[in-house]
Length: 165
Image (cartoon, rainbow, N blue to C red; front, side):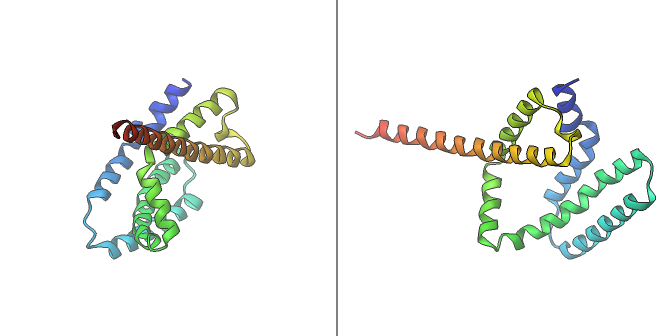
């Protein structure tokens, strides 16, 4: 129960194995069929959304369709990344996220753990509390990365000054 249940059932649980395997396959996939893949992903995502919205009333089937929806959405998002990268602010943000992803993850996990220790579970709270939770995770991620970059820069300056005559 508690944090261990969260970690083992949500971080890398057997139900996420399919998504991890699909992510590995997408990362290694050749890009020469990109337009056909994007079109198929858009059609598949739209079909899943329509099925989930009106035709599926079983909780387990809805959860399965929700998990499968991540794959076509990932294909579409990966296709959009080069276009987003043409806009300099977006390219800088993507580069920052790519080089500091561990800091972002650790900052979010620290904030998440602290909030769960001292407060209600935001996943079950009202929408305003969930947006506040999102803001806390964002501040925690950016703060952790900023502190990490400052510490790294200070260590590098100290190392350089120690080697100078």
